[in-house]
Structure formats: structure tokens, C-alpha cells
Image 1 (cartoon, rainbow, N blue to C red):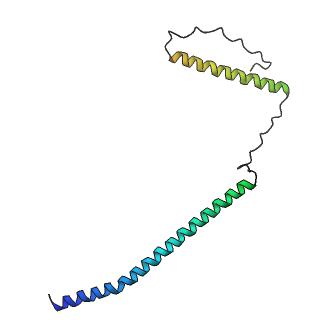
Image 2 (spheres, rainbow, N blue to C red; image 1 turned 45 degrees about the horizontal axis):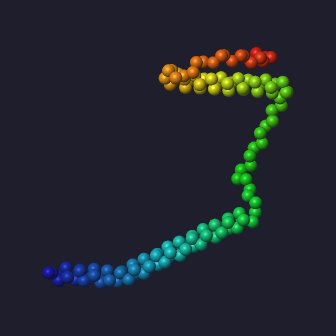
Image 3 (cartoon, one colour; image 1 turned 90 degrees about the vertical axis):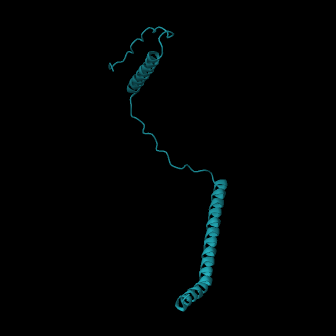
Length: 127
């Protein structure tokens, strides 16, 4: 091997040996900093948990969000009865439609014969 190459190798090795301890100390410092940061974070979390537990025990629960009060409709008793009748008719129609859909989708051998039609509800406005 040429002396020039040997000198280069020796120089590189010496440099690596010098940089080795520096790198090692640098990595150790980083590890220590990371560990202390992790411990601080864990301590902060446990303190926050303890604070929320103590506040829950001592104080009554507060609602998360205040519910908005329903707006009361300004209706006369006649109009209220009228709306109630309309809603009942709508619900009855919906139930009948569901029953018809179930009856039509199943096989018709075992289905009951249709009952008598419901009399129309008497309403003053004809709705």
C-alpha cells in the first residue's frame, strides 16, 4: 500500500476517533432532554386529571351546552285542535301506507283481508 493512502487512512481514523466522543455526548444530551420533556408532559397530564377529578367531586355538574328554549306558538285553542287533528290524520295515513307496503311486499296468501275504511275526520276548514 502506498504511503499516501496509509496517511489518509490514519488521518480519517484519528478524525473519527476525535468526533466519536463528541457525537456520543451530543446524543446523550438529546436523550436526557427527551426524557425530561416526557416526564414534564406526564406530570402536566396527571395534574390536569387530578384537577378535573377534584372539580367534579366538589361542584355540581354544569350542563355542557345551554339548551335553547322552545318558542311557544301563539295559537288559539281552536287552531291548536285543528293542527292536532291534521297531525293525527297525517300519522294515520303514514301508518296505513307502511301497512300497505308490508302487505304488498310479503306473500298475499296469509295476509288478512282489508278492514273497513276509516271515516273522514270532520274539520271546520276542510284541511
